[in-house]
Image 1: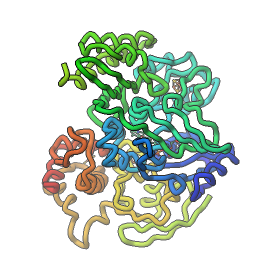
Image 2: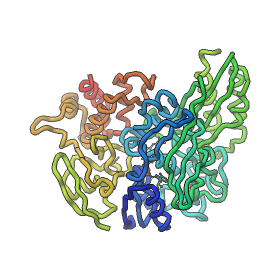
Image 3: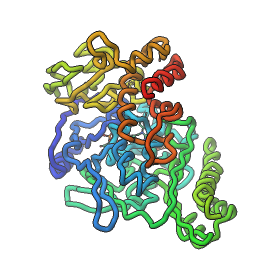
Image 4: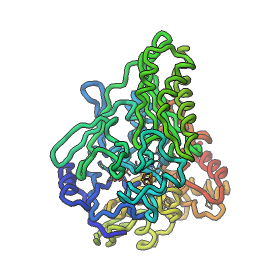
Length: 329
Length: 167
Ligand SMILES: Cc1cc2nc3c(=O)[nH]c(=O)nc-3n(C[C@H](O)[C@H](O)[C@H](O)COP(=O)(O)OP(=O)(O)OC[C@H]3O[C@@H](n4cnc5c(N)ncnc54)[C@H](O)[C@@H]3O)c2cc1C
Ligand code: SF4
Ligand code: FES
Ligand code: FES
C-alpha cells in the first residue's frame, strides 16, 4: 500500500478544497469499499480526506413533502429511519438487502452511491481492465462473464453497478446534491451514473473534487405500492444478479403510472422507461406485465455467460408487478 | 505518515503511534496485543474481525485506525465482566456454537450489536412489515447474522444460542 496523508476537515467546503488541490487525494467515508481497494492496489491515493465530520448525517423533511438525506447518514440508520420506513419503504428494503449488518453500520449514503463495480478483473490488478487502467483492455469480455451487463454496455467495459440503494433511489426519482470547487449543483440520480462508452474509468458524472453532500427525495407518489426484489446466488450477503425497484399506482384495474429501475443489468441503475410507458393506462393483466418487461429487455445484448439475466429480469419484474397488484385484480 | 492516536480498548486507554495505512484490526492485534478480533479474509467478507465501535458492530479490517482516534472499542474479550462471561458468549458455549472457535469472537460481538439493533426496533431483510415491532425468530437471526461466516458450519447452534439470549 502506498503511503498517504490523512486529514479530517470539519466542513464540506474544506474537504472539497483539499481534494481539488491534490490530484492524488480521495474522499474517505465509511471506508468499506475504499479501504479494500487500498489493500488490493486498485486505488493508490497520496492523501485521504475523511468526510465524516464534514458531511450532514441527518434526515430532514423538505418543504415540498420530500426528504433530504445527508451524505453522511449510515446505510443502517437510513434503513431504520422511521420516516423512510413509513414513506419510502422501497429504499429501506433495498438498503436492508445489501451487504451485512456490520457493513451497513459503516457505509454512508454518499459512499454507497460512489462504490465501484465488483467486476472480478477490476479488483485484480494483475489483469487488464479499462476501468482501472484505461486502454489496457477488458478481461471480462472473454473471461468470467456471469455478472456482466446486458444493457447499455460497450466494447470497452461490461461491468455492472453493484449498489442496491441506488436502484431504489432511481425509482424514487432522487436528486443528488453535489458540492464542487465551483459551487453547488443538483444532478438527477438517473443521470448521475454513466454508461461506460469509451470512458469506463468514469463511473459517474462527478469530476475530481466533487463531493456528494446529500440525496433529496420528492414526496412519494400518493397511494403508491412499492417493492424491492433482489435475486442473488444465496439468500443473504451477496450482490444482486438482478434486482427490481418498483413504485406503482393502480386505479380501477388499470396502471396509473409506474416507476421502475433494475439493478445488476447495467453500468448504472437502469431506469426502465420503456416498461413504464408500456404499463401506463393499461389494464392490470399478466399480459401487461410480460409485455412491459419484454419491451424493456428487448435491447439486451448478453454475452456467453450471462444470457440467463434476460429471462431472469423479465420474470422478476413480472413477479414484482403481480405481487404489487394482487389485491386490485 | 505516522500519527499518534488514542483508543479506549475494552475500558483501557491506549495511546499509540500508527502509520496511516494501519487498519484498526492490525492496530488491535499487532500493536496492542488485543487478539480476540480475528483476521479471516481481511476484505470485509467474513466478519471474524467484528468489534463494537462506540457500541455499533463494525468490521475492524476495513476501518483505518487513524480514522477512529478517540473511539471506544469493545472486543469479545472486553465483553466479559471480570470472571463472568457475557451472556451471549456463555450461550454460545452452552449450545456448542463453535468448533475451532476462530469465528467465535466475531460472532459474539456481532450478536451483541445485532441484539441492540433489534432492541432499537431496526428491521432486517427478513422483516415482513418494516414498520412493525421486531420478533427475532430463526429467520431473522440468520439474516441479521449473515455477515459472520463459520467455516466449521456451527450455524445451527449459533442461532440456538442467540435465540436463547434474545428470548
Ligand atoms: C463483503 C461486502 C458485501 C457487500 N454487499 C453489498 C450489497 O449486497 N449491496 C450493496 O449495495 N453494497 C454492498 N457492499 C458495498 C457497500 O455497500 C459499499 O462498500 C458502501 O456502501 C460504500 O460506502 P462507504 O461510505 O464505506 O464508502 P467508502 O469506501 O468510504 O468510499 C467509496 C468511494 O466513494 C467515494 N466517496 C465516499 N463518500 C463520498 C462523497 N460524499 N462524495 C463523493 N465521493 C465519495 C470515495 O472516495 C470512494 O471512491 C458490500 C461490501 C462488502 C465489503
Ligand atoms: S468489465 Fe469493465 S471493470 Fe470489468 S474488466 Fe472490463 S473494463 Fe474492467
Ligand atoms: S477479517 Fe474483517 S471481515 Fe474478514
Ligand atoms: S467455529 Fe470454526 S469457523 Fe466458526
